[in-house]
Image (cartoon, rainbow, N blue to C red; front, side, top):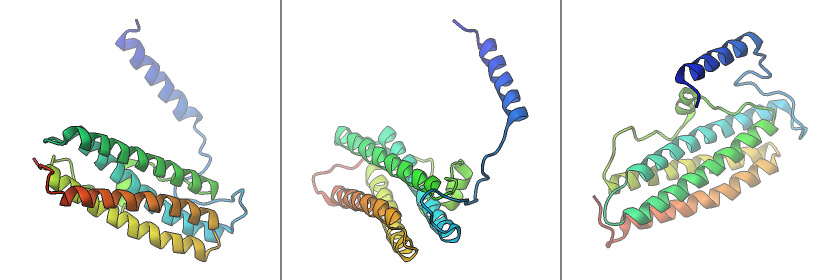
Length: 194
C-alpha cells in the first residue's frame, strides 16, 4: 500500500511538471473559430449566453445535491430520490451546454468563482433549510432558469443557430416538468414538512 508521503511527493512532482510544461490552448472567455462555420461574432454572443445558462445550471445542481444529502421528514425517501434525479438531469444539461459552448469555439465556464459570478440563479447558501423552504428555493431557481433559457432560445434563433435552440428547447421541457413537480410538492396537503 502506498504511503501518504509517496502520494504527496507524486502530487508535488506532477504539479511542478505541469507548471513547467503548461501550454494554454485557449484562454477562458474567448471564442475562436468553430467547425460549424458560425460567424465568430455571432458565436461569441451565443457562447456568452450559454455560459450564463451553464453557471446557473451548475449552481442549481449543487443546491439540489445539498438537498439530496440533507432532506429529512416523513417523505425523506421519496424526496431524496427526487432530488437525486433532478440533480442528475441538471448535470446532463450542464454537460450539453458545455459541449455546445466548445463546439461553437468557446471555453465553458468551469471555476467555482466564475460560475457563481455568472449565475443569475443565486445559491441559497450553505445552511440547511426545512423541507418546505428548500423546495420553495428550488422552485424559484427553476423559474429563474426557465426564463433565462427561454430568452436564450430566442437569441440563438436570431443568430440562425438552430442547433443551440434545439438543445435549449429539449432541456427547457425538462426544466418545466421539474418546476411543475416542485410546485406540486409544495402544495400537496399530505406532505409533512420538517
